[in-house]
Length: 452
Image (tube, rainbow, N blue to C red; front, side, top):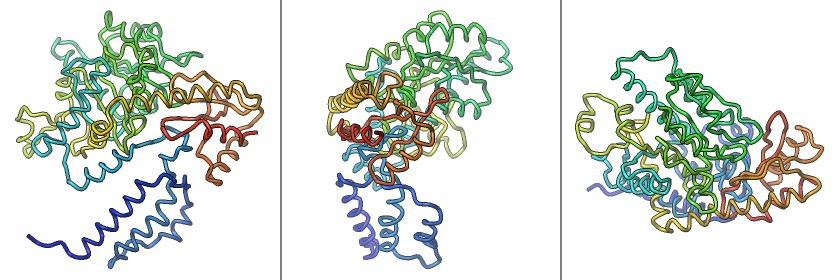
């Protein structure tokens, strides 16, 4: 065997020491983006024929590049949907890279695939899906939604072909007007039509509204997408009434639960998700509310064979895989090459147990309702909508869009919090997206106090 060079050993030691300090740190600052001019001045010319050496490259990352990236796991990172990976999941993410695991096939990564499937089976059981339900961890919700809708379209097309019936001029996907932007993105990629159903003041899609769309578009509908926790408000569609339509209509029911479906693991929120057990496919992102590093989305199919028929890639060099009966994760999404991105969640769940996850998710929901009550009782801010999950939307009385922007910029400049303005129905507002167990009511109160 060839001994490792001293230089290689030093590089590994330096990187692991930095990673150790970063993972164990509980006081990493929020940080903020630098301008392109600043980064050119501070980090320009890092690539050269001779290189700068590992020590200088790591110092450049630690002192310039990393501080120009906002820390998404900070307890006062309250915008978009934060990330709050457990220390165990983050640490294990290093092992996924260090072991050079390929997660695309059973032949090359059976142990990793088995562990990932343990997590997927647990999630499927929690959501009430049958024991044969299976899926794959993909990059994120956009890829998850696209893969599910491709499977739905392929299933509809095969059914038409077998019945000797013509395809419609254009396939249709029905969803809420409040559905995530990735649904429209997937439709553009697939060249299908999106029927975005207005939902009214409730923000929730109901079966009656879906029925009208099904009656209008008939057999052209390949899928109905219900949202399990919208990004802007955290609203859950009336999944039960939508799922009940499957008794009369033939359509694929997909649940986009990228952010919110994790709440179904808790007793306090599970009733909101009645009907998910009838889903044909669903997604939930571990990097959002299941305490896993970027990037990871769990995509689960009720009948995985339908997805396999839609997604398996065929080539001579893949014969060893496609001609076997083994479970190959790459057969279930639009991605062929894949990292075993479900392993950090597996390790964290195996380490702490499911109850720790339920408790942490419940705590975020309870915190959201607690701060909503305080906002409702305040005279300078107004609650826009009672929260369902852990997103709280509110307005500062008398503020313009410019006031919100100035306030948000000041919060980040002062390293107090990251809260970007949002909007609804043409009105600017602010929102707290709470998924981090380290976020406290005092954190939220301190932000509200800056609006006085």
